[in-house]
Length: 290
Image 1 (cartoon, rainbow, N blue to C red):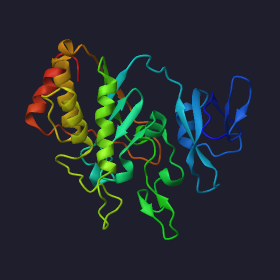
Image 2: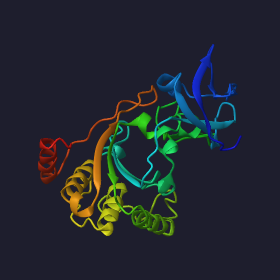
Image 3: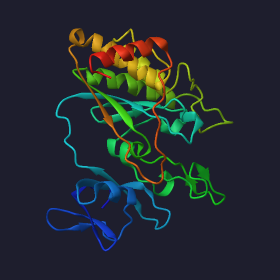
Image 4: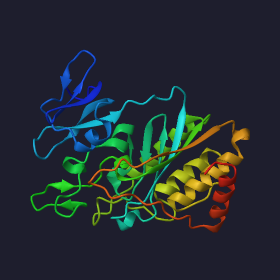
């Protein structure tokens, strides 16, 4: 079946889940479908496809499933603030990512996590195989036999995600900026002592937040400032809202609540650290845009 996309209803018959298509075909009937999907989308319309990664129990390709939602028909940018993962100190301040016409740009201190992801993989990967938390400690772990548990399944199962949707930006221009950033990162010489890490990563000027911040600045929004994920999120909302008429853009703010599963504790909203951004947030609250 490869990466063919299947559409149908997520179904279950006597504990054996499958996807029922419109023509009555039962897809993935004898395969492992993650319980998190069943707890949230049973008897609902979904899409599904297989991933290159395999399930540790069966050796079969992992199945990713995502909800049947209406796709945007016009160029769209979405800026994300992901809440804090409480079991990882490195996630103390949360995380930022940005989507341009459905291509999600993710930046990280880990070299292999500087990438463009599809929405289904970014938001909805199952906690199976290498994506799952370790059965030993519930977190990241490499076992003695070489088996790796990255604890990196779908972000929306791990966190609540706050979204700023932007219409009217030049998406080709913006994507070229972030494509260049990815080229720079992947052409940076590797530190042989830590080959898995991006050598030039810096909390203050080469992080998930600051790379995205600098992309907005290069695009033309010169007043945007911020280092921490939530502070940057507030700052971007404030500055784009201030310039939306001049820039001819439309803004929409919404939240993707965490889809709770046993593999992930509830995420936490990080505080706004910068006093100026706190004032900006209060100003946005007054106009109903926070």
